[in-house]
Amino acid sequence: MVAMPVNNTSSSESAAPVAVPAANGEFGAYAPSEHYTPPTDPRVLASLSRWQGLKFGVLLDWQACTQWGIDSWPLCPERWDWNQRIDRIRGKPEATEQDNIKYKASYEALQRTFNPTRFDPEAWAELLQRSGVKYALIMAKHHDGFCLWDTAQTDYKTTSTNCPFHRLPGADTVKSVGNALRKRGIRVGVYFSKPDWNSPFFWSPHFPLYPPNAAVQGVGRNANYDPRQHPELWSKFKDFTWAQVEELMRNHGEMDILWLDGGWVNPTTNAQDIDMNGLAALARRYQPGLLVVDRCCGGSNENYITPEGEHAMPGSHQPYPWEACMPIGRYWNYSPRDDFKSIGELVRYLCRATARGGSYLLGVGPDEYGAFDPLLAMRLHGVGDWLKQHGEAIYDTAPIAPYEQENCLFTASRNGARYAIVLAGDDTAQPPESVSVPEHLVERGGRISLLPFDETLAPEAGAQGQCALRLSATARARLAPGIAWVIRFAPKAGLAK
Image (tube, rainbow, N blue to C red; front, side):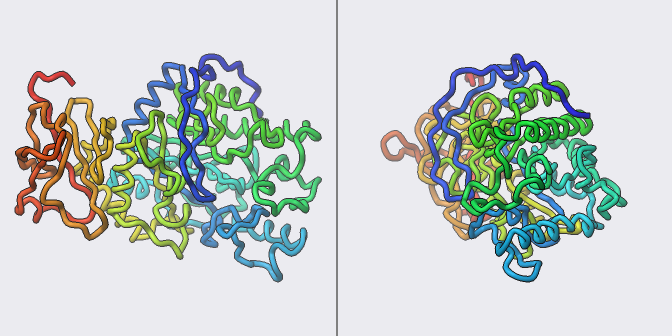
């Protein structure tokens, strides 16, 4: 079924844009959009408020190319130091158009050997639940166009008879993983790539697959034709995209987020217009209140901002909803060469994102057999263990001024409690003997305690405008080193929140 245009009403209406400070980032990291336009649909606003309380999410990055330990970017003819090809064919892969075509055919043949015999959606969901994850984005398809659900629009999918995966339970992973996550109270969204390098309507066989200028950075990722000169072909791609999004929204349970990657597919880049207002309205016909995240495009269809990579994470509190998205290691998908962040690093990124008004999306991926690396699982478990003891300072909180003070971050919960999160300087740092906090936290008059032992702390006079809180030697000896420590400031009885 091809989706027809839908009249878009309140879901596309927007308030005045809010200026968004740019973040410094290295290439490969999306910097935040120039402007953020808040939604006005009450259902979308309610979803946005709920999402902002979740704080910790994951992107489940899994593709057939995991068999090669890569993602789909080497298909792109643009040459960067981070998308070099594994030479699976004789000769240099970039040498000629024919070599490029052979590489693409070899890559796409991975569908025929994708047989993840250890795939268990319940085990995935159990891992995320134990790790304190509150929402997850399931990869529906990456830029290569390989679909991890039972789409009717292409046979390049896990449920095809061309793919051994189709004989295993749960081959429609958007459905099977989504159902397992929801049973454990984890909110669900989908990652969907707007560009599709397998679709004949995007990379058309009627034109050179890799035209002469395709290696130019920022060029080869686009359609290999000009939609203005071939509107009939682009119209087919738009219909294809709409039909796939409709399938995902109609047939796969409750969805919180439609997370659209490939921001270069937009009206201003070679007229690659898929009518985002209409597409968002179509999606919300099946999922009222759906958050639509049209990454890096701005406007009313980017319901929150998604700076990508460690270096693009905002360095201070920001007044708009945002999500720091970064992989758990160096790669978004599974790679046997990866080097995972430590438990302390992961927790500190989560804490900084929370205190700066954002959320934290961590990219994790299973191997070609559908199982997670034991070391990756251990790191996630460590984050979950920390959150079990200190999560009240993270979940469903808001940042409060002064937001950050040296290595100390400040948040507040809905019940009126406030928190000072003291970050370890590194993975070996010991708890401090004393913590300096603003006087206004102490002046509220409520009990001050150290988590997770609920040990009472007595404030002492500090520098101007500050109070000192001393941690006993006994308490410091019981606290785990190298992560982060939390002090709770309870509201005084009867004190307004």
